[in-house]
Amino acid sequence: MVVLEIDPNECNYLTVGEESFFLFRTCDERTMVCPDACPHRGGPLHMGKMNCQTRSLTCPWHETVIMERALTRRSVPAVAASGRVTAVFSVAPGTPVLRTKRRIFVNER
Amino acid sequence: MPAKKTPLQRSRSRDEIRRLAHNYADSQLFINPGDFIVQSNPYRRPLRPQDLDGFDFSRQLPRDQFFSASALAAQRILLNVYESELIFLPKGPLAPVEQDFRTFYADEIKLAGEAIRPILEDHLFGFLDREIDVSGPWSLPAMRAYFATRLDEANRGESRVVETILAAGDKEAAATDFLIQLAADFLTEASAMARNVLGNFGAPLSELFKVLIDEYGYGVPEAKHSTLFEKTLESRELLTDIHAYWQFYLGSSLALVNYFHLVSRNHANFFRYLGALYYTESTLSHANRQQARMLQRIFPGAVDTRYFEEHVHIDQHHSRMVLSKIIEPIVERCGDAVILEIVRGFEEFRLLQGLADEDLIAQIEWSNAREEYHAKAQRLVAQGNLRRPAQRTAFKETKGELSVTHVHDEHELFLVEDGTIDLVTGYGQSVRLTAGDAMVIARNRLHGSVVLSEACRYSVQPVEDAQLWSC
Image (cartoon, rainbow over all chains, first blue to last red; front, top):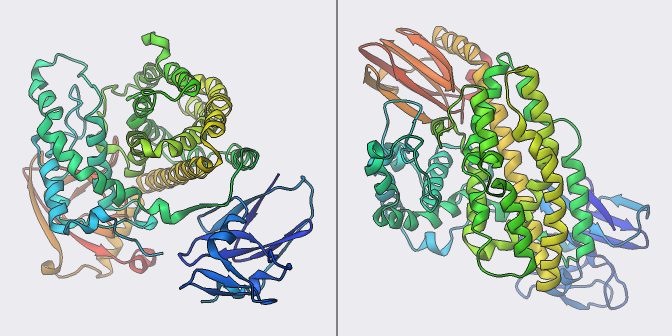
């Protein structure tokens, strides 16, 4: 297990080992750490489009629709408090971590 | 996220909520007393009912108003409501306070308290739901890793409170303020925890009972943790009566006690209670080690620190017991879903403890700088910042009249027109003001006053941040 502290002002996208994650803002303003790969063919979900009326997001690759609750079920155990996010990744200690800040399309409503 | 009203709050008007608060707080038990200290009467706990009309308990307070006047008033009421379920007896004979004893425990006042309790709980602690978001599918290994990381951070480095006390100009006063804040909790034992050892949840209940019985000294009065803390207070010639220093408790100190009642009284919050318990049992050891050293340094050879040393030792066991003998078996039994609530409780108490530290540090710094604030006020008056008399709020009080400690949501300029008054900034800490004297009372800082002359007229007006820092 690796516990990472994330400052959303500096990082909203992480690659932990082979897998990438993004900070997802749900329709009721909760913050979660979600895997970026679409369960269909691995498309970049952070570039998808969110529909808060249907509470679902659409993957940009094949327009696969994923319900918000399904995405949150795949999220990483995390705590968002006092402007920071702390997340627990199920990887071995020492696993390389790359932090970046990028446009998260799916959070644009 | 904006503060939301709960169904309970939505169903009641602001006026109705105010009336409920008055129904409770207008009791003779809670009116203004003649002294800052209440001795031999654990039932007298002033609430300044005259201020209640200015508060809106119908809304959740945001985090940045956690030290506000409304928060202090609500924390005081809430603690009284919770503690009306606990047994307290005066140190002396009951007869002189028997009427208060009967009133404090009377069904009438308890029902009034129950009517306002959930509203105050939401007013004070509702913000935690917005401040802390726990998400994801947790597992025991993830929870263990998370706790280990958080506790490693918490148990590293020097306590900011201890550093502030050691840096204070009047270290003895600052350390005494610190002990008084602890008295809000430590003298009443682990009473909130006791709410969780009834019922039946298998072997973990027995383990929780062991932690509780440690607190109570295994039935040996001399070993009770409250007795050890009483020895600390006695060694500093402080009173050991329950809530003798009620007026000197900060709202955030009361919040720490109230939170444990909140999560222990409503058993739907049981898992949150476990998380909060684990946080406190796992951080007290480190904190108490530093606190014991700080007290010994400030009062060499003149302070009993056995309470703190006991916790340095026993809380290492309690931390281990709470995690491996209580939390983990309960998660294995109830399922991983309860971890969300356990982590939430851990985080909520961590946040509240941080706020309480921040509040105490600010209070110590302000009280220590009281002569500086006195001088600032004189400069503000000299610079012509005084409003016209009609725009200031004027008071006229007579000898001995006491203003129960309180806080303001703005900086205030306090100007004495005539007479003499002591402006109290902490236990044994005050500024004496005579005609023409002024003092700045910093926003959210606890203070009270007592008139020394036959009569005293004074006025107050708000002060902007910019005015304060420019003088």
